[in-house]
Image (cartoon, rainbow, N blue to C red; front, side, top):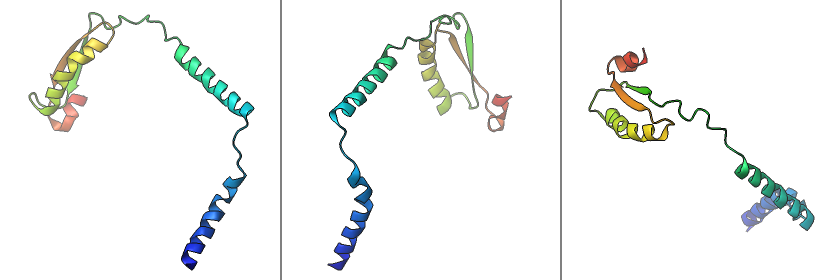
Length: 110
């Protein structure tokens, strides 16, 4: 029983600073809601940057250098992902996958 009482005393000492907190007044709650609404509206209505570079990659080629051999797992992932990447880049550039295995990736890095 003493153990339960000591735990209750510890809990009371921990939560004592929180006992002075009061719920926000209606006016303060309204200010908080208004502030949150203004912040949300600012985020949602912010205009994106102009699309002046929308066709930067049009007619260009991107070399995707892999430090793994052809036919391996990384090469397969790259071949699956390359059309998706091309479709989602502005200008839809051609993606060329170049496998450069060897030296633990050092060849591809150079």
